[in-house]
Amino acid sequence: MTKSEVFYDGFWHNNTIFAQLLGMCPLLGVTTSAENGFWMGAATMLVLLGSNLVVSLVRDLIPKNVRIPAYITIIAAFVTVVGMAMNAWMHEMYLILGLFIPLIVVNCAILGRAEAFASKNSVSDSVVDALAVSAGFTFALVVLGGVRELLGQGELFGFALFGDSYPDVLMFILPPGAFIALGFILAGVNLINRKLKQRAETPLAVTTTETAEAK
Amino acid sequence: MMFDRDQARMVLAIFVVAVLAAAIVGLTDIFTRGPIAQAQKEALHKALVLVLPKHANDAQADLLTVAETTIYPGKDALGNVRGFAWEVIARDGYSGSIRILVGVRPDGEIHAIRVTNHLETPGLGDGIVKNHDWLQSFAGRMLEGTRWKVKKDGGDFDQFTGATITPRAVVKAVKGALAFYNSHRQAILNAVEEQNAKPRGAKVSEHGMKLETKID
Image 1 (cartoon, chains in turn yellow, cyan):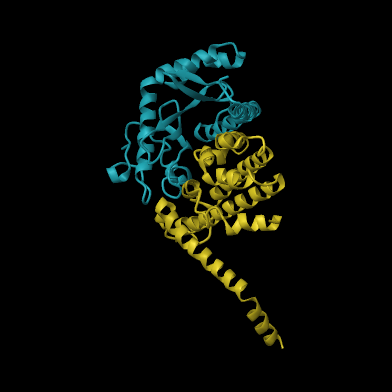
Image 2 (cartoon, helix red, strand yellow):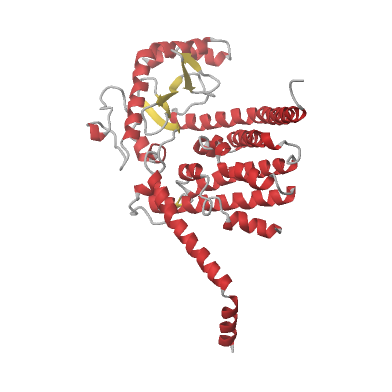
C-alpha cells in the first residue's frame, strides 16, 4: 500500500466510527459539543501516534504470545502522559474531558491499530496510519458533536447561531440523541460511499457522455 | 531449569516494557507536577476573586482550617476581614459530585457562589455554570429569611427547563455551607484573629486586634 492509500483507508474507508463502529464510549460520552469532540480526538491522536510509533519500532522484539499485554502497557503509558500534560497545560478542558481521558486506554480502536497495523508495518507507514485513523476519528467526533450541539443548543463551537428563540431539543444532548444522530450520519456516509462506488464502476460511460456533451 | 528459552524471552519483554513505561510516566509526573499545581492554583484564584468581596490579600496563602474545612479569608489592605470562601460538595446532583465555592461576608450573607467542577449534562444542568442570572440570585441571601429550595419545591430559586435535580442539589449544598458558617462563625473569626496576630508585618497584626469589635 502506498502512503496515500494507507491514509484514505484509515481516514475514510475504514473510519473507526463510520465504518468499524468502534470507540463508541468516548463517542457517546463527549460529543455533546463540537469542541469537546475535537479535543477528545486530539488527545486520541497523541496516544495513537505514540503507540503506533513504539509498537512498530519494537514489533520484532516482542514475542507473539505476550504482544497484547505489552501493547496495552505502551498504550496505557501514553494515555497517562497525555492526561497529565492536559491537566497541566489545558486545565479547563481537562476538567471537562478528564473522566474520559483514562478511558482512551480501553478504546479498542487504538489496540486494534497496534495489533492490525503497527505490528506488521514499517515505522513510517504506522505513523501515517495513526495520523489517518485519528484524523478520521476526530472528524467523526466533531461532526457528531457539531450536529448534537447545533440541534440540542442551537450553537456551534459555542457560538449561538439561531438566536435566543431557538427551542433547545434536549434529546440531542442526552445519550439517546447521540445514537439517533449517529444513525442519520451513518446513513449519509453510506449514501456518499454508494455514489463514490457508482462513479468508480462506470468510468467509461461517464467519460463518453461527458465528451459527447462537451462537443 | 524453570523457564525454557521462549518463556524467558516473554518475561524479559514484558519486564522491559513495564519498566520503560513506568519510567516515562514517572518522568512526566516530575515535569507536570509543578504546572498542574500552578494550573489548579490559578483556577482557584480566578474563582476566589469572583466569590470573595473585594480583597487585597492572597486568600490562598492565608488559608485557615476550621472544623476540618479549608477556608480562604479575604482581607483588605489593613487586614480587616471582608469575607470567607470555602468549597462545598453536592453529591446528589445528576451525575457525579458538584464542587461549589461559596463566598460569604462576615455577617453570614452570601457574596457570590461559583461552581468549580461538575459533570452535569451540558446544555441542561450546566446552567449552574453558565446561567449568570441564576448564580446572581444567591447574592445577598442569608440562612434565615430564604426558602432554600427550588421553586418547584416551594422555594426561592429557579430550576432550569428540563433540569431540576442539579439546581436542587446546589441550593441544598449552599444552604449547608451557610449553616456551617453560622455554627462555626466564632471559631472562624478567632482563627483569622490568631492569624493576624502572628508577626507577619506590623500593620496587619495591629489591625487584627480590632477585628472583633469591627465585626459585631
